[in-house]
Image (cartoon, rainbow, N blue to C red; front, side, top):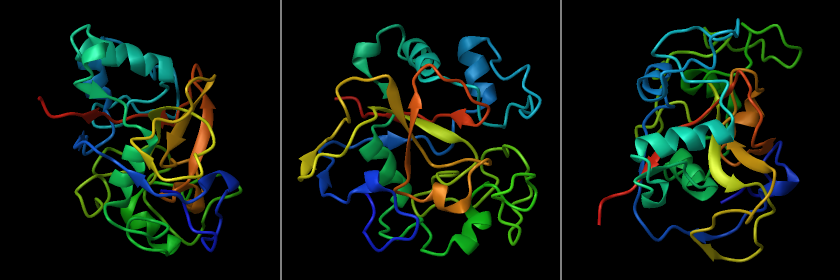
Length: 230
């Protein structure tokens, strides 16, 4: 988990370490869509945002970490403690994103290939940090499954919208760890994956952000992890 010291654009909080995930889990193949959110919550938190197309196939956005917990309470039948469904831990998220790879991205080290696998700040964007050499065909969020999946069949692990993880943000423990779950408490949670607003290095497998748990953003979404019945 994390990135080697030789990886370009590596941040200080990506210290590489050995982790063990002791239990099997499933990862949703796409980000939770607007259609899925509405089917559960009957609300449209993105409705008044001019950069968010109101289309069921697009990822649900303008999500705070706290909003997501309310969604989980409903999909778990009002019994969150059962955790049939949950946000993935940061370790589970990175493991799923990498899909067996050890490179900067699940598809290799070349950010020049990113437009094949994800939606990021490319030539369609008006932002100064855009990559004018690539065109992923979407200025804002794209419908899920618009790009190639990783080796395990998971879509949009790089780009499209940032994804909340279960963990509160904190430094990694500097030793081998089994089933890490991040900081015990805090105002910030971990966000992974990058988005249409992010330049290519921010979509790397190891890249991590800290975001206030109550913050809503037009490029903030999530996907679910689920766990086999015992």
